Structure formats: structure tokens, C-alpha cells
Length: 478
Image (cartoon, rainbow, N blue to C red; front, side):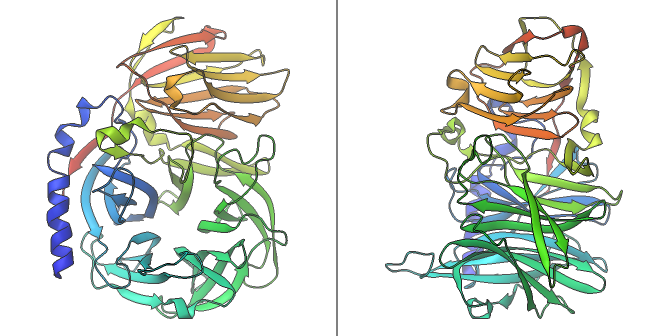
């Protein structure tokens, strides 16, 4: 163990001391969303199923609730309901990752787990850290049990990437297809164009650039967190592009996350078509997917957004910030991807609640409304959060009147009809699913008390509501 690693482990032990004992004292700590034990969380990393268990790694800055030096935190579960926090398996403790163990992915093969990630190095001096002063490395580390990890290996250095790029190259996603290993890396080309580097390998160690995936016209200046997978016979390229300008109800956040249909041969001639945003809410970024042993393609994202202005997250004062979305199962139909929470989430329902107008509830519930009439409706929370479908104007919107939005105002989507809606509230987060997952909104909100008032402007006889239990989270730090 090197001196730096020993220091970080001691600091982490102190930072995480008694954190799980104090969770219920914080009115905004979520019950059924994975969160940082303390400090800051962002991208989900290394999502996989290994030896019958789900593994969720995540970008973790335990010493600073406003971000800072990035490690990987780690949760695992047999059923996505009962979780164990496994501590920090990857620290920034090597010359090639000294300023951050950045995002990456997991490959499972022959009872071993292979984690690929970007090691971040920022040189001291007067640099812009886009074209000068930054060194991105692609790193591999292996495990025989999914808990203990061996020596880190540097696979790609800044000299190995193609010419014409800035120094923003990161977030490897690795998979195997037809006996060939593939890796995609997000990149920012010069002067300012987002693209994805596609590599191939026959041994998981030595990688060769195979193709560059991008659009003919500039589509943002940087593509982060790429993911390339197949769903119902369609090739999907998921990216988080930065630098898109808002177009009416599209691209309303400062940065976006969405997917292209990839037509043709990804290693040769191809086209990227029909970019579609994954989520239209305020808080969704850096999604990653994986296959489980039931054959489901499951997505988890960061329920947050980088670089947002005008938003003041009040949980920073409580020593933590951000969380992950619920796991979502993806299905391709009607020309797009539908998303719904995995079936296991239904196990968290405790009791069905009798619907009344002007009712007070704990903000930990699932609410379902079948809009039999097809007409406009709205549901309000604390006379502040307005969740509304506007039939005549053909759009759906979530908006804030006051403090519960913490500086935010509204997000919307064009929608011809809203046949049904599911609203999942979990203390300080809302996930809203329309028409069986045709459109989704993920948004933080901040009730001031332990309960909220619900006001229904819809036909309540078609509403169902359940109180939701919380995940069981144990601590098993190795």
C-alpha cells in the first residue's frame, strides 16, 4: 500500500463515520435511490451483473459536497432492493490518475471483472486544460471477486489517441461482440466538435482505433459518457453532448443526454440518426446501461447535471449532493426507446393509500393516474410543484412556483396525448413516467417539511397510490 492510498483510506474512514446512523435525520435523504454516503456523487460507473449480483460503482468525492477529487464508490445487491455499500475500491493514488479516477465501465468474462476508466492528470501551471495542461489515460484494473482489485494497468496514454483532438478524451465503455472486444471513448475534437472514438482489441489490453463516430454537422463541442449497445435489433449510440443550443422544448438543460440510432457498420460506413433525449427533466446526465441475467437492458443515470447556473442545491449545507436514478428497463417500440422502473421496485410498495383531494402525505410514494378522458389534468405538490398535461396546446410540463424548485422554473415536452402517468416521489426527487415510459422527467425538489399536500385536478377515481418503503442498505466495507 502506498503512502497516498493509506492517507486517503484514513480520511475516508473519518468522513464516513456514523453516516448510515444519521440518514433518517435528513429530510432530503432519499429512501429508494442510491446516494453518496457523504459528499458528492455524479456518474454511475462499471454497471454490471457479476456472480448473481448487481454492481453499481459511482463517481464519488467524499471530502467535498461540491465536488473535488474523484474516486469510485461501490454498491452491490442481489435484487436491486437490498443493497450493500462496499466502500471505495478505486482511489486516485497513481501518477496516471492522481487528479481523478474518472468514469468508466465493467466487462465480465471468465468469472473475472475488468474495470476500465479514465485516469485524469492536471499539470500545474497556466493552462486552459482543454488544449494544454491535461493528460487523459485509459486504465484497466481486474478483480476475481468484484470486491478486491489488483494492480492498475495503463493501456492508452495521451500520445496514443488520434491527432486533431483536444485533451478531453474520457469515459471508456467496453463490451465483447463476435469474439472482438470494443471500446468507445467520448472526445472533443478541435476546434469544438463532439465525437466518439471506437477501438477494438483481441486481448482486452492492446487497443487499435477502428473508427470515429460523429455527425456531419456539429452537434455539440463534447460527447461524454458514450455507450453503444443493441436493443430489439437496433444499434443504439448513447452520448451526453455538451454545447447544444435550446430548440423550443428540446435541449432545455445546459448539457443533454440522449441516443442516436446507428445505421450501417459501426466499424466502417455508418450514419447516426434521430437523436432523442433520454429524459426531459432538470436532473439527468451520464447514463450507462448493462445487461442482467434476465436479458434486460437496464439504465441508471446521474440524477443531476454539471455546470448548471441559477440552481442552489440546499443539501450541500447538509454535507452531501446528488443521487442516482432508479434502475430502468429499456424497450424499443414505436420507433423509440421506452423506459420504466425495473419490476423489482414494486416490492417497495407498503400500503395502498386512499386518494383524497387536498391530502397530506409523506413524500415517499408511487402515484398512478389513468387519464381515461384524454383531457388536460394537473397534480400539485404543496401549491408549488405543478405536474400538468395541456391537451389543447399538446404539451406536458413540470413547473415550480416557489422555493421547492430551488431556483428552477419549468421543463416541458411536446405530447399529443397523455394516457397515463406514474409519479415516483422519494423525499427530494421526482421521477415521472408518461405513457408507459414514452417520455420521462427526473427532477429534484425540496419539501420544507416531512409531509406534503397533494392537490388533484383530475378524475381521482382513476388514481392509485402506494406508500413506498426504502432500500435496505447495509455497510460491508472491505
